[in-house]
Length: 140
Length: 140
Length: 140
Length: 140
Image 1: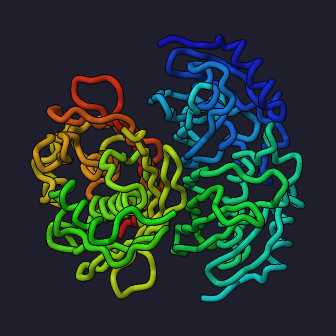
Image 2 (image 1 turned 90 degrees about the vertical axis):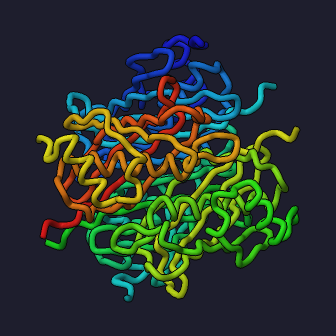
């Protein structure tokens, strides 16, 4: 049980497969079964009133678990999200990055499950939590 | 039990409160407890390989239930998503709009629940399904 | 795409593999992609105040999707629930059976997804809804 | 922010309002925002093959978050589950209690959210995880 990618390899690979979200995310920490990444909050992530949009938080949670799975199984860009449950619990701060703390709960032969706690940088109380399941295609 | 907004009032109101998603969505149908809307799929919604991104489908499901609730309770832009569960079941077509069929399952004093079945225009099999809960703030 | 089991074969098989829930359930209808079953509500399913317990409704939803999958793939008792999201929306009637209407949304090689709408017999408004994912083990 | 009930008061109160599950559960730990309880696994919780049933795990998760909320808001038996998402990730041991570790993530005026990690006593890897939302009725 060890990492297939370093934090830098992971960042490069995500930029390669998801060029659209380049500049949206940064990685703070990567360990065997946890990862911390942040959404670099900008104008495009905000809703009127200055709060970060739901789809932006969904996207952060989705990327965090995807990156965690990739870090373990290596460059299999075909892993696909099959399920997500997400709870929005508080209004995020408008002028702070969002920090996602991901735990890898299961890494099976065909399914991987991770959960994510999201909070505004500098604050303690979580603004959202999510659990995601990924389907891992058979090796070719 | 009747609608507080017509389909045209609903469309105008959403453009007013969510200017970012103007041009992303169109409404096909509005009845007392169901609504059909579509994501006008463009380059910005796609992932490499030509499939519609997960966050775009989340956004469609979220907007559909939000619009359904608004159509019933009137212009209370403060209604907020508290929970979403979403299942991604098939790869969407790359060159077709996504159609969301929303059913309003509950409209209570403080919570509303709706579910959504999403399919690619012209195809039968659903690509995704979602259930969303909205918290309705007390009238001021 | 056709049924592997008749409604009677399905009922017998479930009694064989889940003897604990014998007498709890009955089947009303079985078609290629939908199934209706009922929880024969008794004292053991109730909470103080006379409402059907959450675990009893979870169990009904779980059995309904499991039975729907079995009806299609045949006697593979090893199919296992991997995920459930359930919304409790209204208080069930205490003195009526619960009816579960299941739709099979996906039957893939490794995953099956179905959703369920639950209502009290004789009433229209749903008391609960659920979506369940089953993992289908490789044929031996 | 402090506890409204001690661990002993909590146990007595649950036995009073849920006499059916008396002898099913025990409390190991109660703090301001977390609680550990166990399912005292017996024959009635098992499925053929000796694994703990899904409804038993659902019931454990539901009770854990309910108890955590009660411990904070006091004896308001009317708090009701509105939503649960649960992932079943591994087969539980047949001959060990199940331990549920609950975190209280939000305790709002009308909604409370908690998550639960379930593992077999003596083992590290989680067998299931769940998130539950409770609706808290207005004080009378």
